[in-house]
Image 1: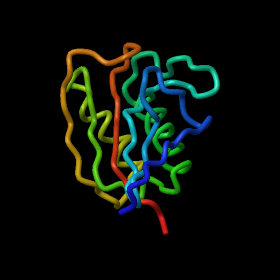
Image 2: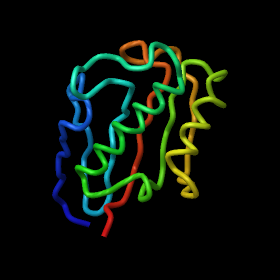
Image 3: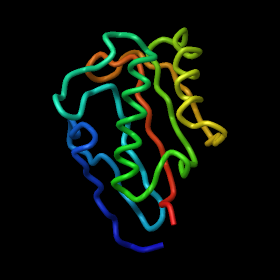
Length: 131
């Protein structure tokens, strides 16, 4: 593995809303910061509290960051899903399964008290670069 860390940034996903990077690549590994349901063009929240719509936008944002890093959802090895209500698990999981298809990365799902911008869901991941 290289000692060089590469900062990943793309206009295809929302700008970081704090002092962090959208992702960092370290060798062939890509560490993506948590994404939520923000429209990258406007910065506005998407979904209006509908966890399905939020999960769709969140995964689209994550896919854009991965693409900028030379990866994609098929190369994700681990995700962490943060939900403010575990009762949203089934709805989130349906959208998640649609995006990942037969690929089944390792995953943790955690209930949290709150998320930035009033999100109902946030997802972060670790992936490998596509060859």
